[in-house]
Image (cartoon, rainbow, N blue to C red; front, side):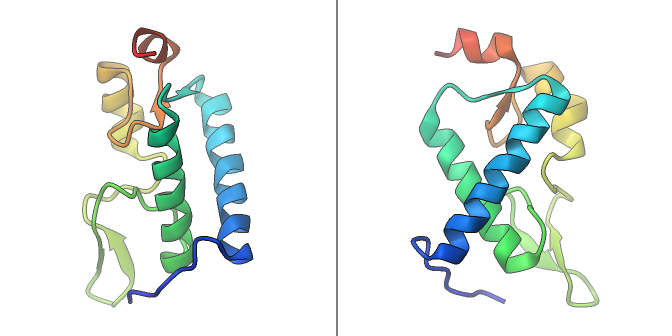
Amino acid sequence: MLKNIDMSSQEFLSEMEKTKQFTDKVCHQFGFVYHPNEDVNEGVLMGLARHKMLYGKRFCPCYMVLEDENGKPKSADDRICPCKQALQHEIPDEGKCHCGIFCTPQYAKANI
């Protein structure tokens, strides 16, 4: 299922913009802020956009995407952004999600 994606193509850049709008919405909805390190945010956004193009879903870029018994893509740890693990455990307990893009304001301020 691997496919080459030209990250400078208009298709990818358009998906990156949609992904940024999606993560902006997640931040607004849950009161999160972006990680203070822009490199973290850019890497995660690129991974989310790539997975959306490859698999049709924004699977967490930090986890493997496998095929289920029917040949459909599935995250190895059932992680579709924003994942349940991040919302229920990682962000409340650690201040950030596993990927690091979504943080509490307190975490971001302490890690500038």
